[in-house]
Length: 133
Image (tube, rainbow, N blue to C red):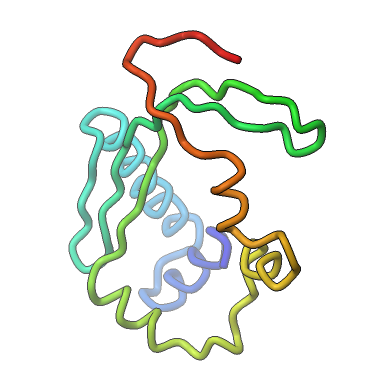
């Protein structure tokens, strides 16, 4: 579902114009983003928690060339769904869901997620280590 479809649905449900509803939806999303930027976390009761976390630098491998590359640390947004959402999602009919790429790859010999982890083990370097191989 797109933002446009959400606006249309809400607009029809509450009897506001799509233009007014779009403004409200956009302001809501902007407030969520601004709170994440300023506070690093926003908890929406009965929905879930968005949180900014720092991903550590790591060594990785270019999948095309196999060359080792250094991936610097970066901020990422995480989402933890609320209990009600998690329960409703658990009860969904799996036949209506697309298969994730990594799940599809696991069906092929040698392409499962576990093999990828074993090929490129995580190393923990002390903070401030800038050496790259």
